[in-house]
Amino acid sequence: MLSGPCGGIVSQLDSPMGGLGLSPAFPVGASLRVIRAHEPILVDFGTCYHGYQVDETRMFSIGKMDQKFIDAYKACREIHDAVLEEIRPGADCEAIFIFDPIVFPGEGSVGLENTVFATRSGYEILTGVSQDIFEVGGLRE
Image 1: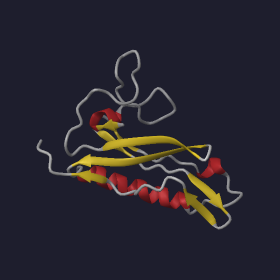
Image 2 (image 1 turned 90 degrees about the vertical axis):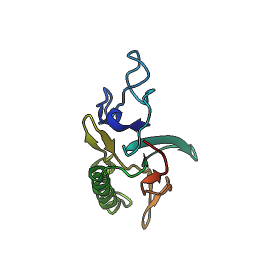
Image 3 (image 1 turned 30 degrees about the vertical axis):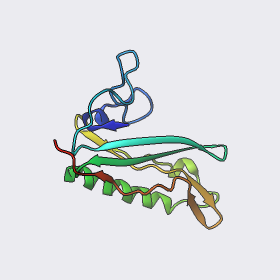
């Protein structure tokens, strides 16, 4: 989970986002930083589904995010949906694979990620959690 400016910290791994981490000994991932209202909260879930490793990324916020993050997320969804249209049996996975985060250094990041299964007629999304931004309201700043 990465929130606010921590989401804009590039990872030393092959990933556009890394986070602050819990200490200099492990400077990657979530930190002890308090999540603030109106900032993007990116949550990357990994789990196992019928013996296969699956991964998904969803966006959350406490109150409404700044419009630029909402617009960036809409762009991520458009890219995501366009990539899904290319999935079919025999398609080159390397050519259509995309993890589509949009990073704002020092401010945060947004992204959308699903794991899909190619079917005879197209695809099935294995990570079926809503792709809308999950907004929690009512907290004071």
